[in-house]
Amino acid sequence: MTTATPGVTPITGAVGTAHTRVEGRDKVTGAARYAGEIPFAELAHGWLALSTVARGRIVSVETGPVLAMPGVVAVLHHGNAPRLDTGYTGMMGVPPDPTAAVFQSDRVPHAGWPVALVVAETPEQAREAAEALVVTYEQEPHDIELSAGRPDAYPVTGHMPGETEKGDIEAGLAASAHVVDEEYTTPKSTTP
Image 1 (cartoon, rainbow, N blue to C red):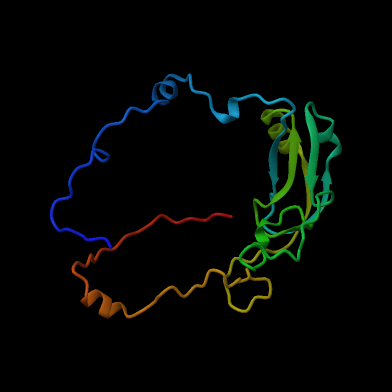
Image 2: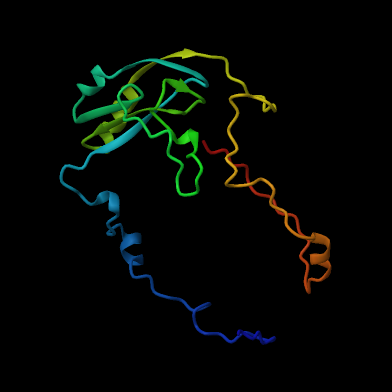
């Protein structure tokens, strides 16, 4: 059993005491080596090519010129990517997020959707080739209205319920020794 003792918490030396960072000097002088700087034999690098249309279908991916570029090893896209197991349900017993299933169809659900992965010998070669890749689209009208009842709306899987309130909030606040009544704001986040 743990007993809480009111009063001043004794200082143990962990908080408020400066600790020397072993890697600090190397980082500020540029001598530190990062994982990306360590060479590995036969290491390939990938760079994503992202859709330039808001919604549509991929008509063609012109891989020939890109595969002829120096250092390019492969171009992975919906036409040659391995198929994912659509029956997989994951550890929580729910299907994986459908927005993570890239290169599985010719559909483009939003601008910036990954349409290809260029693999090359260096990061620079991969990036240059991905930027040179020509993808032809059949554009479709995009919808920016969030309306209920859409058949293609993002599915709610149920493993993260939207209802998060539990218990009697008023009774809990009344019984609390301290109540902090503040308003906080957080920046908008729009991640794909």
